[in-house]
Length: 401
Image: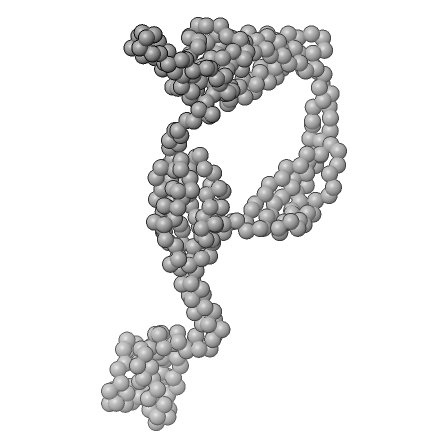
């Protein structure tokens, strides 16, 4: 029997007789409270409540239900809302089904191999979003990834919930055996002074402090194999490898007018929305006009970290402006010139160039601001080119000795 309780109010001339009849039939009444001279409240079980109809007629009392409590009433309510119950059961089944599927792939530790490239490899291996987790073999995937990408020295694959996690460590590729036809030498790409040279393979032809010309050979791909008396027995050809840093000067020149047109916002701005599904785009913004800026913000639809849907929503902020002519002050012009020089230096640094001296001067005339001068930089060089082959020395006979 499913438990349940009913709180009732009993009103009538024969309340006490009704109470005695209930007790005489072994009905369990709880929390009896007299609320009036001819009224009381009590709590009884559902099975006992179904037996009180004959007693109510015999005593002539009136019974009002105040409150219902218990699982039996929850089931009765659910039976009256079958669609709601069916929807709840369906949601539980869908949740159980989805929890057994793969919905996210997380890759960390990769630098040399882009995430998109690794995701493409996993797709070729049959790893797709929504597939059953039972079909995924983490050990086999890790081994296949190491075979496909030799620079990956260690990889761990594991399933966590509905997520497949890869932890990767990368290293340098092992040096390949050098063939004679793969041999090369290193040549200078700039004119300057050797600041530093570290040779790992090949024969260095210059040393620190030497002046070099553009196109000059710096490290030869020829190794002289000598005997005990330092006589050259033969030549061995290798792929030259070295770190060579050359100190040289870079010319810098930049100019811009002092009379400029500055954008001044009119304060008029409107926001428009757009929606893109695949290659189909619904854009509510007007066509582009002159003297207006557009700020576009995109919000791609992602279910998980790397699971992206072909759905894109966004906003377009259109701001109107007018052009106002003004003349830069000497201080403002120099500040702008310094900023442009700083941007140029940042680009050099990003390429691995070290800046040791700055000999750029900024001049202001009536119409322009001119920056000219040189930067003394230390740059890594070493252009690979094929090694010119030499005729192998003749073998020495005992008579030659």
